Image (cartoon, rainbow, N blue to C red; front, side, top):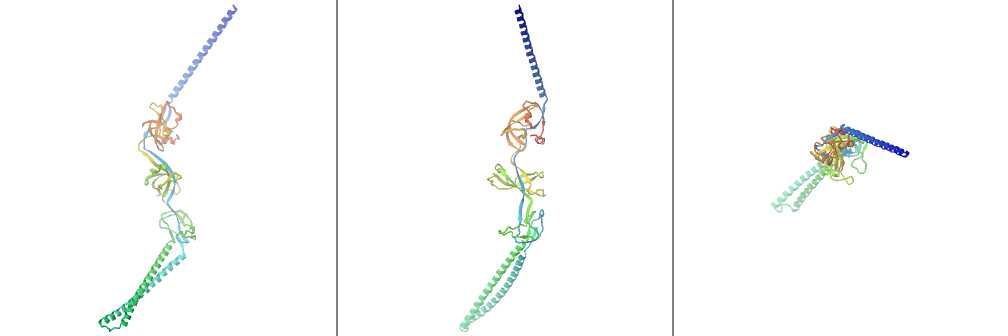
Length: 423
């Protein structure tokens, strides 16, 4: 009887344990179902709260593929002005920063020995002129003597022919000899005149040379420009610039600044796109201005070390705004397309020529689309496949969005996104 009572008590305890375990499992299931429901509701709540997103349209626009090259401005011409003759600076009229015209006198040299040589050459000319006059008189005298002697011989010869034996042969021979002698004297006098005339020509040539050298004492500007450096002052001794044995000091340095040269190293890949006379836009960051330039000349050969071709762009500097040494950039257009399908650079996640974009569909949900990239511009990319015109693409902050997410699209321009600090 006691054993049966204990057995009944144990069976009742086991049933209570099973009931408690079942109740605990049931409570756990209810709690789990409630948590899942709250999570689902929270998720539905997140979807109902659409986030704003910046989008841009895939549209057809002109697109340029360009390379940006940089360089600094150099004067179109720049020379050190030397003296042709040696002398002392008597007067210098210009200083650094002065603008001069072509042919304007920059300085005057004092060369006393050159002036003496000019006076000596003038005296030699006068002496030669006197010698010519004397020679001309000698020619005239010799011609007169020859004419008289020739006439006398002619008369004697005529009389001898008319009456044989009237004139002695000796007398006739003497007259012929005097005729020949006077003729020779004429030739001698004419040779002396020619020599005097040659001496005059030499003297005049010497004077012209010295006069030209004397003109070099006035140092003039070879072209219009600005004095960028002054080497000498009044009283400075200047050596002749033509001497190779001395280090002749220049007087001034002159630069032509109405036009500047901009030398650009064009890479090998862009060389075929360089054409003489083509217009380019020259951007000067220091002035925050853009100037019109023209491709004026290029080397037509590559530098073997840098694999670039030296190309010069001429830029007019009418108002003197540009200054020598200023840094400038040129966007050299390599390829141009009129109306390709393009999107902003910020919209594409790239992998070589392929990439992906986030597109906002008509239901305002985000979809990811794979695209093929064509030509590249500074701000936009050409899309060959994967998009159609008018598609809305997400620009910037791609990591904050995922496909299927509902958003509120906010159309913006790529330039505005850059200004706001977008990627």
